[in-house]
Image 1 (cartoon, helix red, strand yellow):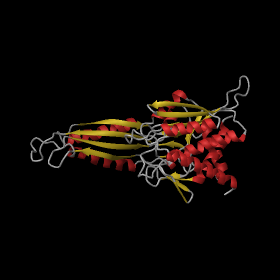
Image 2 (cartoon, rainbow, N blue to C red):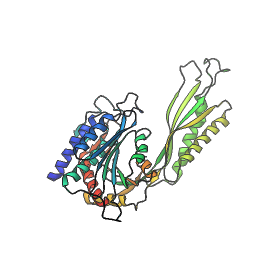
Image 3 (cartoon, rainbow, N blue to C red):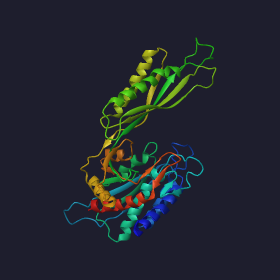
Image 4 (cartoon, rainbow, N blue to C red):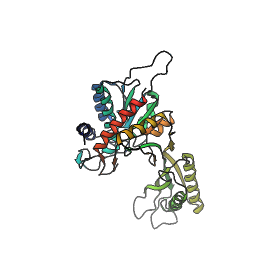
Length: 392
């Protein structure tokens, strides 16, 4: 590793350590969670010190987005189009930490372990380092570069949904971990809550008791059959559509018929599938349960749903990223899709072309979440190169 690469890696480790140490647990997932305020303010200070213009505003009470703008030099003359602007965007929130040391990052064998190391404070680290590199180079870009942190990606993506109203760059890069691949399309999802209603009675009183849990049996078996049907369909290059039961809650005690049962269901969508289609599938499963037993009474509610997204691979931001990654990696960049939904979906739907590019990291949402520190530095270098190619 060269001296410059070692210095970049060291800087990445220092900044990422500070970010991981700041608990930004999404309170929508974990009541009492710290929220994104502290990490947003930390990034706002750091980027302001680097010379960027900073806008910090609450999307939800006490939960701010941060947008930092590195101004470009401006237009090319009267009648010429303005130079293009590029946003480097990541989410500030994390899922709840696994154990008391989750926010005490540890480095082993070139990897940093800790909650948020991969998902996705490493990407934010790369974006900040990229902006600071552009400033330090003394070679400003023609167009603006924006470094953005948004709230709530792990739940309802309220931060990304609010962003286009306040900030509309020409294109964006979402800095989620992609193993330094360029991701141009990804799946969607729908979360459903199925409620079954029974009648409470003593367990020895079958004439009056109605078992809300057992009545969901046809729905559960239908989920298994639907998933098998989805598995038999042609998959997308990045994965297949699927459905599974996620959570179940019902009953109060052994000697009592359960009066209610709630089932959580996740439907993962690929290109060619839609949220409306998944909602129709769930209604069909409830109709099946009603046909199996006249005592069944239930309904289904869509909790959160997002459509699959495909970005045209000919978009200039894709070309800029692919060329930059190729330059940094010394090999042709891999351009691919991914099954998991990301905030890029909301940006693309809002008319902001958004590709995904980030470091090498895995184990998100587990006790062994990690990111490769050298890849954070490579990601930062590629983002600088992509910005120089795009913001002209």
